[in-house]
Length: 237
Image 1 (cartoon, one colour):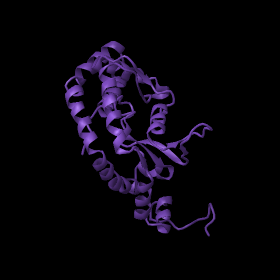
Image 2 (cartoon, one colour):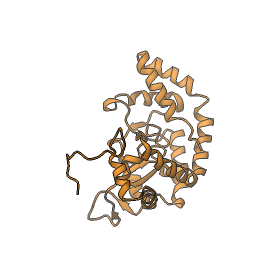
Image 3 (tube, rainbow, N blue to C red):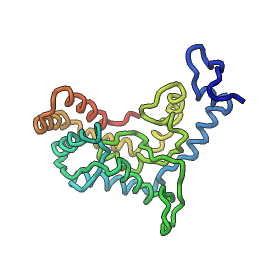
Image 4 (tube, rainbow, N blue to C red):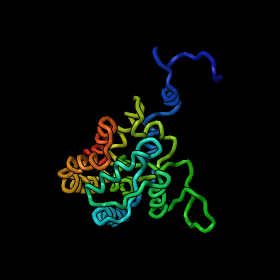
């Protein structure tokens, strides 16, 4: 058995990768297939009503939340001002923990809960993380859309993150992305239609008005503008 710190042979000529070692002991395909089976999604029959309510909340000024943007969430005010200009909505808040609303939603719509409570009849779930399947956590529609959220085994962290890189991450995404795209295709198409009708035609003007209102310096605003356009973009299928 190998000891830590010993001079082991490299897996490749240029780099030693712990996941290359892992997949010498267990098939990568088997691990990925098994892990996908263990992901907890919200059941289909619970998605439609929640999604329709989410759209109505955005269009009618009902409180919604998003994840913070920038260091300590200070940049979140740029998104708040943008949504005020874009939707006439001034009731979008920064999520208290950056995951409180999705945590509550999954606790309501699945049989599982991440925090043990004496009065909670649901099953405790452990070593799972709450993940946004299509990202866009500063998007007030998708941050707390039930079809965009799932409990994912934490051992998939190196392969599932939107910023994760490398051969194994790409291999997992090549398997996983088609599965979730097919599973939630109807919701993706509906979201894309919403973007095309309610966001895309107004976005540039709303961004211009946001810059005037906040008087952000050019570099910071251009960085925010790029981020905003990603967050509010359609999902490619």
